[in-house]
Length: 115
Image (cartoon, helix red, strand yellow):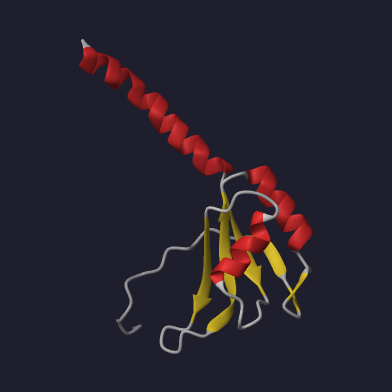
């Protein structure tokens, strides 16, 4: 009998996980100064709501910033507020470009030649 009870909850858990994804927002942040650190960007966005993760994209070899990054916020309303208030906001001498990130596109396995 308990196994049936657990099994009956599985669809609800699946729906809960699915619905939570709809409320998250991945935000693109461009025109970052080269000396901006992940923690500084997190602090800036935290003023507008909860921040789940921050990732500044860096060169693989030199580890210098490529000038953009991504911030993930779990609350869509808070994320929208941050997006509105921080787009064109001057941070470390540069005006930020803040938009909702586009979904990552599928990439094929690398390493081969095109024919």
